[in-house]
Image (tube, rainbow, N blue to C red):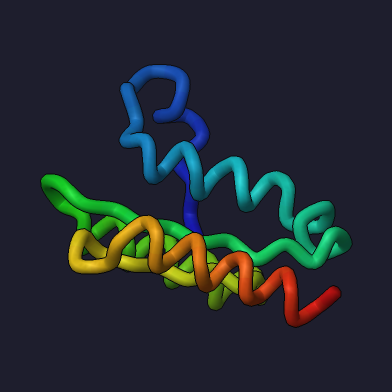
Length: 88
């Protein structure tokens, strides 16, 4: 996953790019904490943002689940709660 760091200071990057960058920077801590990441995105260009998050999860080996506007927040939260309860 390529992050144009020279452009980060001169351009206004998209929020999804900033989120990907932060996840990328914190990869080892997220893995150590066994964090599962759930992303729901809608709005303009949501398919591009979801594709970037999927690619990042695959590249880093992090469990990142992505959902578009068809998914409800309550449904995604239920999945996250079920994941936590299964590991308890």
